[in-house]
Image 1 (tube, rainbow, N blue to C red):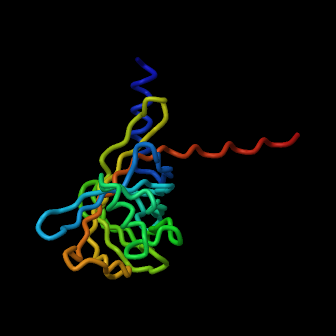
Image 2: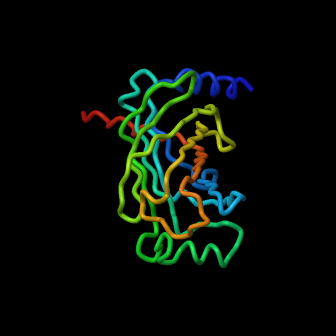
Length: 193
């Protein structure tokens, strides 16, 4: 019990230092919502990899980068998913992933941040602004420090050349949920002697 209390104390004391969190892809993902005619269609995408470097004392030193596996798009309809993967939409045979790389972090409240970055889809790169929340930090089931994050953005699909379908709204809402696993610091080299 004392070890558990000490572990929580340590994570609490270091949560606002410069930490690197690797995305736990098993507990992270991207969801989206876009209106088709009158009803929103929702779907999900897998995060292939990602990393968050967070420094609350110096937000300019913070960064996030992620790779999204667009070819994993899932709207619970196999025919629609096949169509989304083809040349009318994402051409995932040629462009299987999308990437995001932050360029600026700004404070927006307690554990709230505005993160600007470059989103690349089908080799088209455009700036995007994310409303990011740090949901918490703690010790995971395997005894390693973890963090929880959520980011929300609204984008215009046509900015990335995804313009097919007159009944489909231009605006797409993205929600990114991430569990990060703290990257262990490399051990200091041994002194020779």
